Length: 302
Image (cartoon, rainbow, N blue to C red):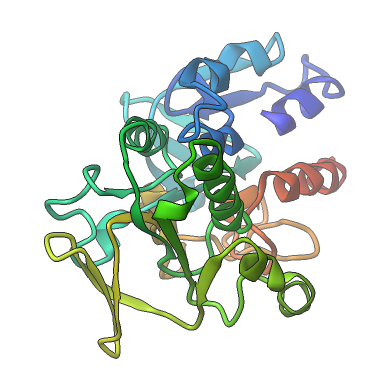
């Protein structure tokens, strides 16, 4: 969306056409998912028509992507159409994949096991919290990288605030279980800000790599069989790139695209560029990163 607006403003339309392909006509303000479980936002606050944010004079196609064929300079769509291109910008994002963790989507899924990285998960958790009387809340990051890496920690602090507002904070135990060595993604931040969890009465369990989840017994098991019990589990599942990247045969093991970190040109082919979460770059998979990358990509592509 950012790139379409930037390019539409400067490209000669007699020489260039711009086509944007997206899977559906709804634009989700994904940072808003975090606030849905606590009733701060509702779905109607964060879901808008995608066309509202796109410039005039470009072609908009709503379809899934079957496969990208770099050697043919074309993208094959689920609707049967083949789109040729001179330049391709891939911004297919990252997506939660709870099925990558053994047992996570078992009988307890969306009953006492929830995610908030999808609108469906966030709204289901919102309904559950309205009637939850208390117990042990475990917030677990399955593995890194994840999009918006600070969001799980924000969720923990919001939960502390919300349960306090509801008058049941003394009935809720909060445990933050992470594969990182500290609560924050950066060691310096963990060293300076780590005591925030202690001040809020949130237990930190670091260096914990989940191997499986028993949703009937309500327990997490690490690969070395350490147990963490819960009454309510909020999981941040494995994040992966789009399945179309795997079908296209040029992603890494998590379907993220090899990308030159200086230019955002893909390592797949010179006329393919990658933006945001779809890259394999050593940067946060956050909306702000995609925004600042777009400024650089705009210059580089021109």
